[in-house]
Length: 130
Image (cartoon, rainbow, N blue to C red; front, top):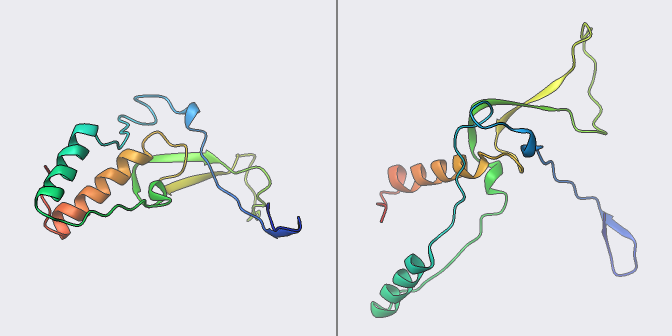
């Protein structure tokens, strides 16, 4: 709950997070990729920008892991508290959610986002990797 200055509830905020700790290497995912920049790379870029009088800007893409499509088939249990309409009979089978895009908590979400962003910058925008 997000509360105002007087303590009144302004809005409710929810974030759906997958139980990534239950994923098993080789079965649920093959690779992970933490997207980080080496300090030396950053210093070189800043030195070049200073030497050539370039403007330097930065951005943070919020919810980036939610934007990438998944290569693997990933299923998760229906979140607690979510009402699911019963269409017909389920024949005793448990219902699950099939994920089409990345989700917070998945081990491969960062890697999938990096691949998609890289494809966009290189293929569509014409950038080259350093």
